[in-house]
Length: 99
Image (cartoon, rainbow, N blue to C red; front, side, top):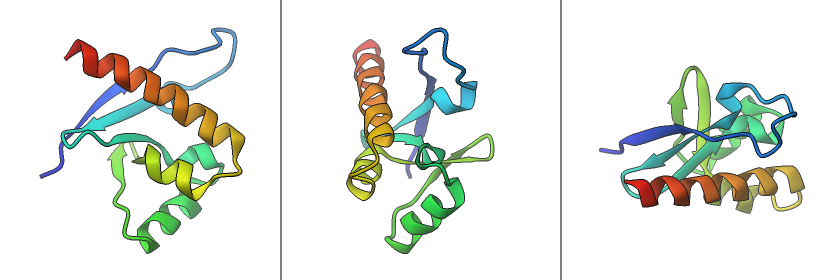
């Protein structure tokens, strides 16, 4: 069974508005890192696209989270998605090293 441990990342820019849920990421027991599906701008559409490809989402507080590798592969021209996924990967590496 897949178990996800949830973390809240800090804000790279302390002056930028970023609701807490947008800074949440998860690390599954298989090592997969999950980021908010809403990074793409349309959480519902992104979730539907992932489901059509057989990608399972993790849910937290009524928001869908998808594997970072899938988000980057599926949105290769969305600079902001890739940038935030890379930031989350850095936070995930730090979280893993503290386990």
